[in-house]
Image 1 (cartoon, rainbow, N blue to C red):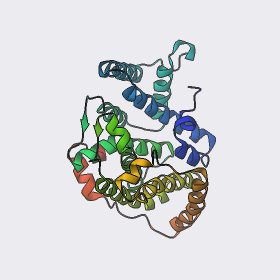
Image 2: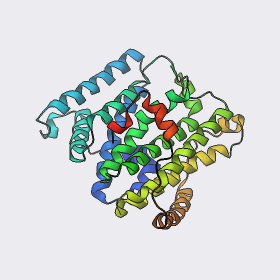
Image 3: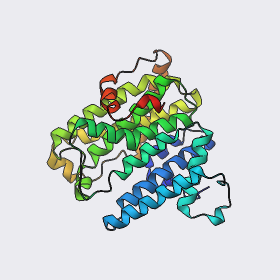
Image 4: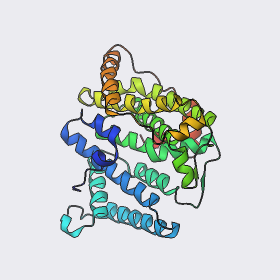
Length: 296
């Protein structure tokens, strides 16, 4: 197992929510995040594109060879850090009924950023990209939390997509510097992206009811804290103020406040029924390229 806690180092909001998970489940979620972080770091390295593609293809090769191998439990002394991260992930996937096709979706999504210029032309491109790089993570996390209800698994995808749309709205300027344009760099499009994110946050809520109770509060906290990032972005009001703000995040006091509000959400869940899936229109768009039902 990799010794570095990627979740604690690089994902403060998720790590905060992870405090409310049992230790063994927290460590499993950390293994998933470690793999995601390694992929992201390879794509975002400040080297030329050819070297980044070579590094990314190398870890894809490690992933595919390890997945096909029967010798995954060999000593860590024989493995590089990347091999350990991949090995941990594949064992995690097998133990939690996570289909390889979901991991392939994630790898393809992150790898799609390996271009001289990334430009998403449509809402369909935005939704498909958000599913691949984050909806997959929501789905895999739900599997780790022993969720089997299909409506709840769709809700997990929704929450992942909502969080990715929030990331995209927050990182417009940073992405521009890397020649990546997921949405047009103006405040009107940022607002529209956060409105779309809110729709996915809303549709994810009732599905949390089907998550085992001992894990439920952590997901509610993660949902609230991350949604608050979007609300802080909207408070900027215009592009000039947004640009001057730098990286927008929720500080520790804000996280405490959102955690307290999450207790109310936890109570509300006892009194509502899980709703039929609300994002049919958006799923139909994604399904033009990806059969989501095959991933559940």
